[in-house]
Image 1 (cartoon, rainbow, N blue to C red):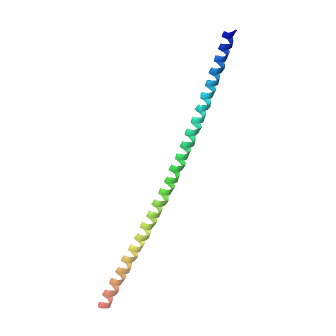
Image 2: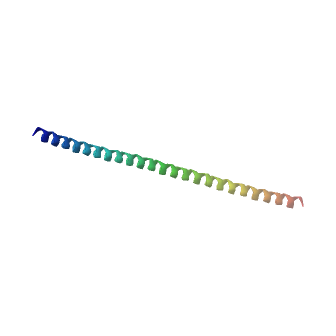
Image 3: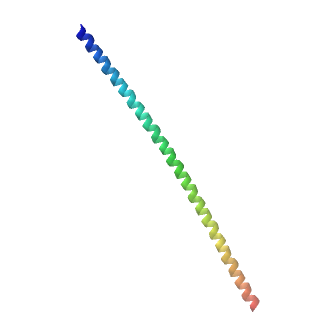
Length: 87
């Protein structure tokens, strides 16, 4: 009788241990997924910030290029005006 009770207790303990391990595994998976999602959000935020920074740099480059072209146009006009005035 005692052997049967001991065997039943052993089976219950093993089942309980299996259940606890499964619960811990699921908790670990959930934590890993949470961390992965967090890192993915951080990476996406970084990509968006980098894209915005690159767009700002490109806009500044275009603005400076337009200023330079205007400067050259103004200089050419001034040179032509000077030539006409000299003649």
